Amino acid sequence: MQTSFTTEQLADPNVAESEKILRRCVHCGFCTATCPTYVTLGNELDSPRGRIYLIKEMLENGRPADAETVTHIDRCLSCLSCVTTCPSGVDYMHLVDHARAHIENTYRRPLADRLIRSLLAAILPYPARFRAALQLARLGRPLAPVFARVPALAPIAAMLSLAPVRRARTAAVTDPQPVSTPRRGRVAILSGCAQSVLDPGINAATRRLLTRFDVEIVAPRGEGCCGALVHHLGREDEALAFARRNVDAWIGEIEGGGLDAIIITASGCGTTVKDYGHMLRLDPLYADKAARVSALARDITEYLSTLDLPVLESRRLSVAYHSACSLQHGQRITALPKLLLKAAGFTVRDPAEGHLCCGSAGTYNILQPEISAQLKARKVKNIDATKADVVAAGNIGCMTQIATGTAIPVVHTVELLDWAYGGPKPAKLATSGRKDRARPVAAARV
Image (cartoon, rainbow, N blue to C red):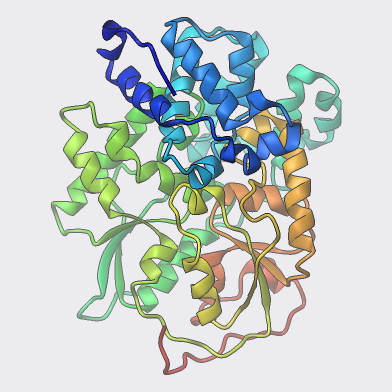
């Protein structure tokens, strides 16, 4: 794509980077076939190619964002399916990130939209606030249909509908026992924000499983939200503040006792932490440290694949594996989770159209509830068609989204692996009536 940025514009390193990304696009349109919003809406401006044109025009002319551009950028899920599809290597992720920051800095949204976005940014990254908000949301659930009738309040209705009916059980923190000597690794596990409130059992299962295979787990002080939620809202200063705080926490541990990996069990967070090196590349105090942190970031399935876990007998339990966009497109991890599940004795089934987003996408199912609902219905239809006993996924957002549309239990991949290798049966399966029991570890290994 030909561009005409001025020398003065290109002096801005963010503009210079976007210009290089824009020039790689050759208008081929391959991305339109795999873009969830284009497939759903059929509007060229709701495809990656269309959004690239809008971003180019906005940045090249150095103008504030307008309502039309904002509408189509807001409809982007950042699922990154287009990045997987693109034959030219267009770095759409960083281009749309720049566009969102530009929108946040130059466009004044309608009052209701501003308030809802500010509310999300003020609550979701902070576990204590989020926990209190969920308590209020449970009380307000009956009002969701009322809010849904007012377009400006539809996000409020979506938030109320997504709130869990029951409070998540607090995970026991005393399960892991000291590892034997010599240890097989030393890792930190991102505690995060929303996941720690919605389903603390995920990280509890991770701790049990890793400890069982002699991996030492540390909890660096000061670590928290990865910044993904505000990053995708265009609130770049807040996102970078979260990133710096985590970098400080992890670097302290790296330079102290050392770390073999930083384990992340929410793939949306994983994509962001792996991008810290890029996000903080212009910060002379953090660029090198952030790059070190990103190099150590691992999805839990990536790390487990290095441990040579035993191969188990069949469990007679079929698993529909949902490949989260942030895992398959953002981190290019596709086969590992399924191989681990198969080695643990599960029968894995692939739902049709696995490349398409479920519609969760961070806060997307709140801010774009209509499009999100269409994508969820399509995803659930394909999952239900597998007739699996359970759905496994690697991202809390996807799990929450899918669980509101299907009767099949939805659990994290690591919960099934923990169960298979001697841990407790996942709570969501414990009430399903199945009589499967964990089998002893076999001698063969992956």
